[in-house]
Amino acid sequence: MFKIKKKLEKPKPPILYNVIEDYSEFDAPGNVTVCAMTLPEDVAAHAKILAESYEVPPGEMTALLASGGVYVYPQVGGVLTRGLFACLVDASGATPKQTWVLDLMQFAEAEQWARARGRSLAEAAWEVFHRTLPEELKKKLEQKNLGLDYRTLDRAVAKGGDIKYMDFRKDWSPHFKRLCIMPDGRLIETGGLEEFAQLHQITVPQAKRLVEEGGTLDVGGEVLACQIVNGQPAVARFSAKNYTKAKELAVSRGLHLMDALSEVAYNDPAMMRSLQRKDLGGRI
Image (cartoon, rainbow, N blue to C red):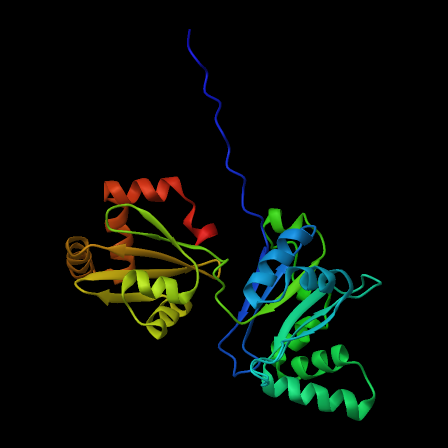
């Protein structure tokens, strides 16, 4: 008698965002990445990720996402070391829910603004935050759904309808997992920049530049190659042997090094298996 083994399907991780616009190259403190969602909000998942990312108690975060308001970070040893986390909720539903953080300087400015005008700290936090944003983003925030043309959007994004919430993020969160194809075909998942830098034994500034700008980075005879796909970095690490092949191919056929590396990857059985297993553009 044979036992039939049931295939256990792993629960899919929640989709937190499906619209991402990067303004991180703008001068601080207005350097943000706009992460938005058109599908219905999974409040539990949204609260969990934001609570862990910004070190806000889960209960407080859930309440903020429900009703809006601010969370002022507590003093450490009698000294304030961080500003505040804010959530703006429009009870009428005319505008999407929005979350952001203020640093210490912005927090101090918001407190002064609130006292001077007799307004709430939440209103002041938005005024101070909004004032720093790039002009292009300010104009988009005045338009419905950031002015996106839904006729050109991916169907999976467009079918959700209007944007439900926007998180103005400043971090490469540990919760935004990235996959990297290693020379032996393994897919290694990393979270924040520090974890990615540690895996490849490079500096955090090197890691930041690579995933934001794309390109290649020599790492002890091997090479890290990063392409920006749909605004997200897709990373692969090539062995010294494959790196040499790519450089020779680039010279002999007049190819760009990135194109030569892609061709080498597709001709490498181990790396090709990884490419077939995962849709890197959507995960990395």
